[in-house]
Amino acid sequence: MRNLSLVFLAWLVVFFTACSSQPPQTPAQPIAAEPYQNDTVLREAEAFFGAGARGVADVLNKAFSDNGPPDAYIKGEEASAAIGVGLRYGHGDVFLSDGTTSKVYWSGPSLGLDFGGNASKVFVLIYDLPSLDALYERYGGVEGSLYYVGGVGVNYNQRGNVTLAPVRFGVGWRQGLNVGYIHLTPEQTWVPF
Image (cartoon, rainbow, N blue to C red):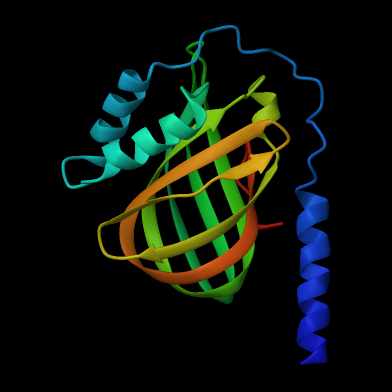
């Protein structure tokens, strides 16, 4: 039991070090446009998820009421699995409100009372993003989820002032509570840390 406690303590140190709330480096190109309108984002998400994703509008409206209109969003897909320790890998396209688009990849570990696996379409709302370069960081979060076949879910990840709100719709079953982070990069990597 003591070894398990030490492993968990070491994990928390790594987690909080990786997800420190230090602001990102000075951005290369600031986003000059206004944030997206909620109606525009809602139409994009509904077209992306398709007619089978009931509840997507409710989940997005909750995110809008919590955070307002996003500066950017990501349309992508991911797979994850966990037995206490979990891994998540995904990829997609990021759309900035100034019209810029780019490929983005993400991965990340998790630790907790979590079991199962799922494959999802992911629509990530991005708030307070100063530039595209500032997106490529680690974002910490706590996720409590219960995925069913056809389930929709959202959680928040944050680093400094930038907040990510991934909305997931997929197949599989994953149940539990975990702490972890997602690391966004401009190039694909299989190393989840």
